[in-house]
Amino acid sequence: MGGLSRLVAVAANTFRETVRERVLYNLVFFAILMTLSGLLLGQLSIRQDEKVLKDIGLAAMDFFGTLIAIFIGVGLVSKEIERRSLYPLLAKPLSRGEFFLGKFAGLVFTLLVNIAVMTLGLYATLLATGRGADPGLLAAIYPIFLGLVLVVAFAMLFSTLTSSALASVLTVGVVLAGRFSDVVRNMREVLPAVPTWVVDGLSAVIPNFRNFDFKDRVTYGDPVPGDVLLWVTVYAAVYVTIVLGLGLASFRSRDFQ
Amino acid sequence: MTRPLAVLLLLLVPVVPWSQSKIDERAGIFRAQEEVLYLWSGEQVRNLFPGFEDLAADVYWLRTVQYFGGQRVYSRKKDFALLRPLVEITTTLDPRLEIAYRYGAVFLSELPPTGAGRPHEGIEILEKGTRAMPESWRLRQYLGFFYFLYLGDARRAAAVLEEAAELPGAAFWLRTLAADLLARGGDRAASRQMWQRMFDQSEEGILRENARVQLAILDSRDRADQITEAVQKFERRHGRRPHRLEELRRSGLWRGPLEDLNGVPFHYDASRGRVSISRESPLWRPEPPAAGG
Image 1 (spheres, each protein chain N blue to C red):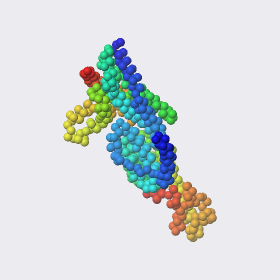
Image 2 (cartoon, rainbow over the protein chains, first blue to last red):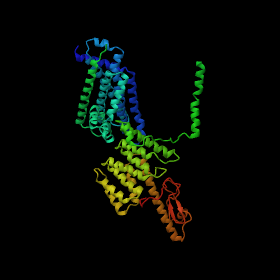
Image 3 (cartoon, chains in turn cyan, brown):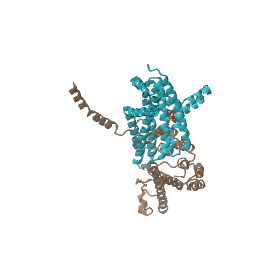
Image 4 (cartoon, one colour):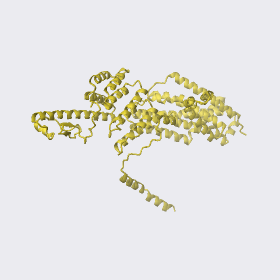
């Protein structure tokens, strides 16, 4: 059995494990419920029903996807450690890298399935209300997914460093900071005493989750240029690689004796 | 122990709807909620929802619509105190939500009890909209209309309509309307044209209904003016004014209805010989700021 097939086996197992999580069903249920609530809210909005439906559907994907990524992501490795189920696994011909990346791939696949389910739910709701299945929405959904992959990477990094509770807090902190990245960039306008290198350093380190937000553009029917999506993909891929690399290094260096 | 508890619970269950019915009896089934706004700045709200500004804008827009409806129908005070901040927050969160500018301006500008009666604030909202969406000729058209219809400023209205006419896709009639306003300083025909345009452009709902009412007001004023002319004819013929409007009918000088378009009898001021819409009528409005009404 090659390294890749072992990694895929861990990923498949992680997928099976995560889809059994009750929290996942709860979150997906609420996401779909929220999308359906758009039907009612849209009617109260004076001719803005389609926009409200799209706004709510996309926000639900983003918000609940982030919650899934954080709360399942932090448990992927730490649970195995806490339940001591990691030791027999590592005693098998399975490297720590294969285990770690397999876990990551498994959760990313779970998120992909969730996003697909929520997307189908949104399109079904739009069609049921006589609206077109606007393919332009995918230009916002794809970057949302990339953002979620980055959140999983951070959740896994922190879970190798500390307890799952603290890892959740740290991941939420990074996500919030990343969503306020424009505030960080313009920090000197409010706090001129802060040295430039601090602002530049923070801007470089904190992931810019604003990069993954095209919800506003697509709900107004504005096109998202392909090259922008390409650069967002490159940004996400590089960031995920760095964060996963750090997580892997931390996981490899841990002493499980 | 379990059985008495179950009996007690069963006995208590019907008390809930009963007590609710008592509350409704005392306070009325539909009550205007005491609205509270904890955050008054759109920027503050924006900072609370990073990445979810559009959703927050939708929520605030729904609040605006509900607040406006609640105040208009159920509130006794009808001061619409939170209307401006709600519209401001909505449009700060989503500067491209065109409907919020249009409806917000109408809600703010219309006279009580229909709206807040603060046309300057309505115009400020539209000005904010034209800054946020400089390419929208429709918003600029509204701004021009509002300058004339609510402030009676025909010159300013004409200038804004000229600007709107320059924008891509603008309606061809904007330039003619601007020229008419400048040439005649604005009259009832210009008002009618503007309300008719707003009626035609509006979606079914409150904005269209408002335009329909405004057109009915203008038609009723026309009818009142025609009856006033008949009163003057009567005076010339008989050397006195009629005591009551029915005398016009008997004299054959007026064969049409003596009510406004809502079926409410006109008010007749026999001392001045002037006919106008009755204050009892839903179509009554104070005299317009210019010759526009």
